[in-house]
Image 1 (cartoon, rainbow, N blue to C red):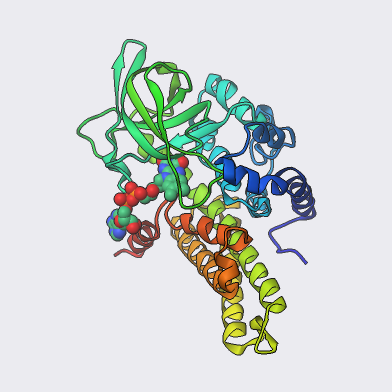
Image 2 (cartoon, protein in one colour):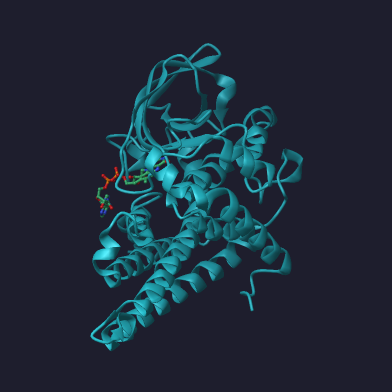
Length: 381
Ligand SMILES: Cc1cc2nc3c(=O)[nH]c(=O)nc-3n(C[C@H](O)[C@H](O)[C@H](O)COP(=O)(O)OP(=O)(O)OC[C@H]3O[C@@H](n4cnc5c(N)ncnc54)[C@H](O)[C@@H]3O)c2cc1C
């Protein structure tokens, strides 16, 4: 029996995403990992299935679904066997495009959101800078008004989809003095003079997702591409990061579960000292503990998703779900690799990739420590 937050329609969706993932994604995982990315065409295929607009309104080409549909997608994308695929897709659907729906003008929705939902335009969200990581308010990329344009100067790093994005939602500073209040979002299109991809970054894991350093040098962006309200960018972005963090937590739990399943499968088959290694009490108990922690994380994600779906904005619980889920997922993957012995450390194993990929989720979209800071603040500390 499925969880109570999911209806029959969600289960149907799960089946159709799973079929797509098994047919169109998983068979190519090794190839895309080696190549450092997957073809743009995959976005178009996902768009054609409606998977890039599950919870977007029908008037923009979306499916008009609820928040849970995004959870289903994140969970099922783990079946792609390359975490970078889910990362790239979720940055597109859950990070870069939500502010366009919420704060964009109708013209911006037609130019960027509609083709993004179809998979015809790929998007990125550029917040992080060399001097501004966890401290988003330290952003230095300046946007200065010049007639009916803004001139951008600065750089961004660690930007998912950055190499190939058709447009990036870029967080800039428009007021020098005001720490939080001086940030503004712009939609910057590929090919805009002064906007370059300086470098494709090599990562420990998530090889199927490209990560870039972006540079803006006297980059003239039309004022029509200002997203939301001037100097309100910090609040716009903080709002949308919450939704993404919970979806990320759902994906992490699914990845941790996949690692646990692999550990049980391998540990049952692998025999030493005349027994399956999974059956030694030391290992059975560890497996049982990881299964328990993952179940607790899953319930936390679902209960928090229920609150989001019902109109709440539970910042504390979202942060708790993010830090807890990503930790238990990585811990499960780490133990699963251990139970594989030397086989787990070989590049041909599936578990090594899960181990490398799950590690990133404790850093991206807000580190463990920043989640704990948010929770502590909510506790009045
Ligand atoms: C795979 C991947 C994909 C990413 N994709 C994107 C993307 O698409 N767009 C984007 O804008 N960014 C992206 N990022 C960047 C990511 O959001 C940042 O790496 C993250 O927010 C941390 O910033 P930082 O790396 O500068 O670390 P820092 O902020 O320099 O932190 C260094 C360490 O100090 C700790 N620390 C910082 N402040 C505190 C504090 N107050 N209390 C306690 N400890 C603290 C941190 O937790 C961390 O352990 C991505 C990162 C990764 C790894």
